[in-house]
Length: 521
Image 1 (cartoon, rainbow, N blue to C red):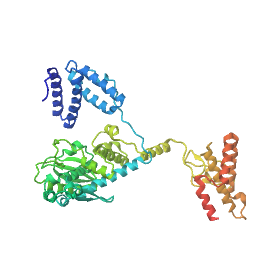
Image 2: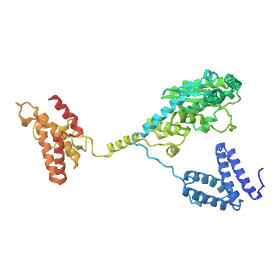
Image 3: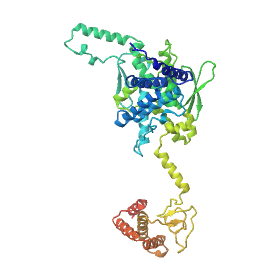
Image 4: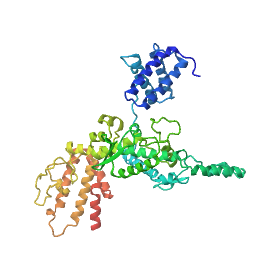
């Protein structure tokens, strides 16, 4: 049944077995051990046909297999990230088995895979991501609200209303009547139809885990994902939590959730939102009523019907299939934790606090969870320029280098006072700076047009020389003459800007003011 025993491999397998047992005893995840065994079996299967595996030839066999992986990457048979994962796992095992000082990964010729960053829409990615997560979260809440005890033990199918519209139809592993040939086919004998309908009625009437495990597991999967999104706990920890007593301690913006058994010390499960307390307590009531006679002590006792080991976390196939059916993007435990961490960082602007709330170090957060946000980046860039850029935003058509306004020279008593409030005053301030750009010249000429409109509305009995608008226009003309004398480009820019203004194409900074003046005239 298993083939002939290969004695030359006994020593290798014995050392690998001892190593994995040691890791298991020291607290290594059983899922990690299972993954190692699967990769090891892949390597040994290749050795069955292509190499003589023994302790003496282990390094040679592994390097040959690594070369094969390299060829598969080149030909496109396997992704580099997959091959690197296989090789890194076996390198860690074989280095200890062989007692090597220089690791095998330095000899395999395949560099460690770097995480690829796929460009997204810069301005829309974060917003769209949050909208999709909220939509997915609402879908999970619809499932939990639509599967109370009455619905689970009631008639089939169960109709789960969705807030986005429509409903989800759940038959709990019972085929819909319209797909059963014995019922829909008119050529089927009547007794077969009666037998089928009787069996279906018996299935619906049976209130047991055998007939309702599908919809029970569906709610448990949804509850587990909601719990992870709230607490930030990883899947391996959350799934193995046992049912205990719980208390919620008030904190800013929510509660700190703790669990405790009898008189034992409490264990913090993380900080959760205020609304989750009611949701969780409602789930506990549902869970205790449903699993009152069950031997399972898990907080999320997903019913095992396919021989899955109790320690093995679910793959969320139920949620995955429903998301695919409804066209909803699925967010697994890791993605939910990533969204939670980045949202917390955006709100708090504190990496240390974010890492603590997510139950890992700052280095782990930035390496595995951090996702740059364009809004935060824009704020940080603006703050940097505000602190280091000598050019300050000014109310007038100029650039400013200081917040302390002072008059250059007083042309007349009616010269606009520089006060960092009136645009005209900026033209007579020592702190202003003209820019050698086409946009700046366009802005100056548009501002001149605005002052000309103001001057045309002045009282005819008022002396023109005392009008601040005329003084401002003269100041702009002086600036433009000086800029035209410096370069030919400035001459071209002035001509272009003059044509644009004659066709009423005004600079955006002054366009609204000119429209208001025209409406008021």
